[in-house]
Structures are given as C-alpha cells and as structure tokens.
Image 1 (cartoon, rainbow, N blue to C red):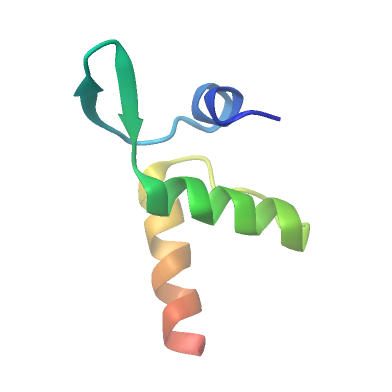
Image 2 (cartoon, rainbow, N blue to C red):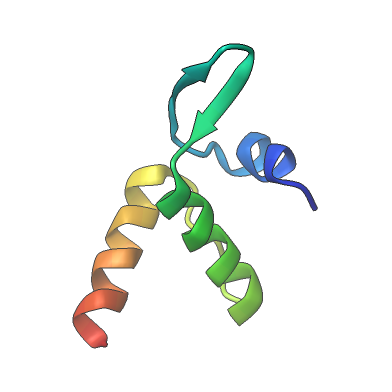
Length: 60
C-alpha cells in the first residue's frame, strides 16, 4: 500500500503543500504504519491517532 492510499483511506492530517506535492504529518503516518504492523485497528481520525501515540508514549 502506498502513502497516498493511506492518506485517502485513513484521512491523514495534511500539513500543507510544497508546489504540487502534499505534505503529510509524518507522526500520523508512522502511527498508521505501527498499527498495521502490530495488527491493531487503525483509529479513524487524526485525533484518535494522537491519543493512541500519547498512550503508547506513557506506557514506554
């Protein structure tokens, strides 16, 4: 799966544009990748993924 497909499927946070290219939030993409690799369900919203990252950081 490509980053663009993740962005469309999971509604990745967009930080802006650089010319014709879209700049995505790397932390949001990394959280999605982590969920996929662990076999966990990916939270539906960027805010849900922010909360997941915060929970995982506290547990570490």
